[in-house]
Image (cartoon, rainbow over all chains, first blue to last red; front, side, top):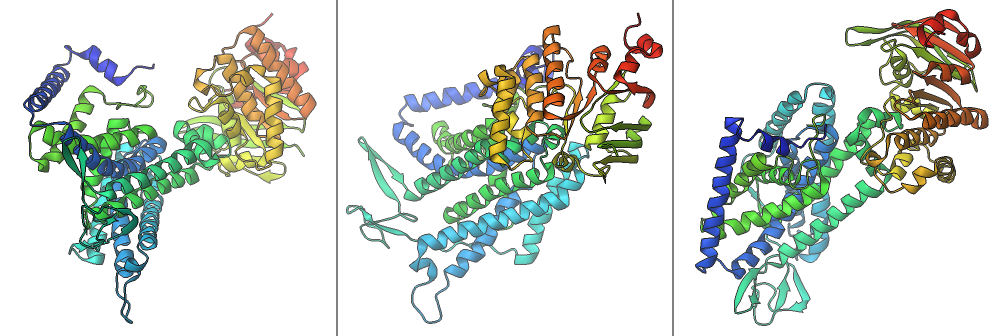
Length: 384
Length: 238
C-alpha cells in the first residue's frame, strides 16, 4: 500500500520506454548543468562572491515564493486541488494595496509631507494589512462561489474551474481598473541609528536607507551588493511563516485543519464544521499571499492585472519542489527556488533573464525524479 | 419516548438501496446492538443516524428533536458520537491531538482535562504514547484511541461500529469491558454494531437483527441469544 511513486518509477525503469527516456533526458540535463557549473567554478568565472550574491538576492525572492507557495500547499492539503487562481489572489493583494499606498503618498492640500513620507513604517504596515485583507476577501468569495458547489465533483472539474476563475479575476481587474500599469511610489526609509558614512545615499545621506538603499558589503577581497530591503522581506516572511506554523500546529483550528486534511468524514464526526475549516484554510493562504504581494510590489513596483502569473507559477513550482501539501516543504521549496533562480544563471554562465527557464526546468526535473517533492511523504495510492 | 428513534428510514448509496424502511429505538441508558451479516446495512444505519449518509426518507429523532437533515457536525454537538468502523484514527495527529479532536465541539476546558485524565487512566497504553502519531499505534492501541476519542466527546449516545474487529481475544475482552463500564458507570447509551454477535448480545439490553436493509428479528439480548433462527444464522448454530 505504502509505495512511493518515485520508487515505483525506479522499478519501471527499462520497462516503460517513455519513463526511461525521461530519466535519460533528465539525467543528461543534470549532468550538463553539473559539468558547466563546475567548469565555470574551476575557470574562476564563478566564485564565492557570486554565490553569496545569489543567496542574498534569492532569499528575498524566495521568501515571496515561500509565502505564496504556502497558499497552494494549504489548499492542496485539505482539498487535494491546485488552486490555480491563487496567483490572482496574490495579484489582488498587490493591486488593492496599490490604492492604499497611492492614497497615503498624496501630499495633503495644506502642503507638507504625505502620510507615507511622514509615517513610512505605519503607512507600509497599513498597506500590507490592506493587501492581506483584499486577498482574503477574494479567496473567501472564490471558495464560496466557485469551489464549494463543486466539492463533490471530480477533481478535474475544480481544476478547470480554478483556471477559469483565474482568467475571470484578471479580466475583472482589467475592466474595473484599466490596463495601464500602475507603480508603487518610491518609498525611502532612513534609519538613523545605522550610519554608513562611506556610502552616502541620495536621500538619507549617511543614514541607512532601508528600502531603496544599495550597499557594498565586503566579502574578503571582493564585495557584494546588498539591499537592506532583502533582509526586511526575509524577516517579515519568517515572522509570518512562524505564526502560520504556530496556528497549524498548536491552535484548535489548526489541529482541525490537519484533521480535515486527513479525513473529512471523520473530522465531521468530531463536530468539526468542515466547510468552515476549508474557508479558514483559504483565508490563511490568502493572508500570506496578500502580504507577499505588497512586499513584492515594493521592489517590483509595477502592478498589472496579469502580474500574478509568474510569481504564482514559480510559487507552485516551489510547493511541488518541497512536496505539495507539506508546509515546511513549501517554505523550504520557496527559499530554495529563489536561491536556485538567482544563483544558477551566473553559475551556468547564461543571462539572468533566463531565470524563468531555470525555475521551470527545476519543475520538470522534480516531476521526473521525485514527483512527491523533497519533503513529500510517500504518495500512497489512496492519496495520489 | 425513547432517547433515539429511527423511523422507517431509507438510505441510498448512489443507486443502491441500502436501508429499506428500517426502524429501531434506543432507550436511555441501554446498550442496544445491531447484528447481521456483511452488507446487511449495520454501518449504513449508524452513518445515517450520525448524518454522514442522510436518509432519503424517514426520520431520525433524538431527544424529541428531528435530526434527520442536520449535518454531521451539528449532530455531534447534540451528543450523538460515532466511533466509525476501521477506527479512523487521524494518523498524522498525535495521540493527544486525536483525543483533543474528540472534544472539539466542547468548550468546558476543565472538564475536558478531567476526561482526558480519565481516558489515560482507563487506557494507560495511550498515556505512554501521548506524543506518538496515531498512525504508529498498533491495531489494539488504535481501537483504544478511537474509543477514548469518542469518550472525549462526552457522548449521550455512543455509536460503536465493530470495535472488536481484528483484535486479539484478550483485547476484545478489554474493549467489551470498557463498553460495559461506560454504560454502567457513566450511564452512556450505546448503539453497538458487532460481528461478534454472541458477545454483543450478552451485554445488550436490546438487539436487532438486520438483513439486506431490513430488521428481521428484534428482542432483548437474552431472548435473541436463544432464538433458534438467530442462533442458526448469526451465532454459529449449536
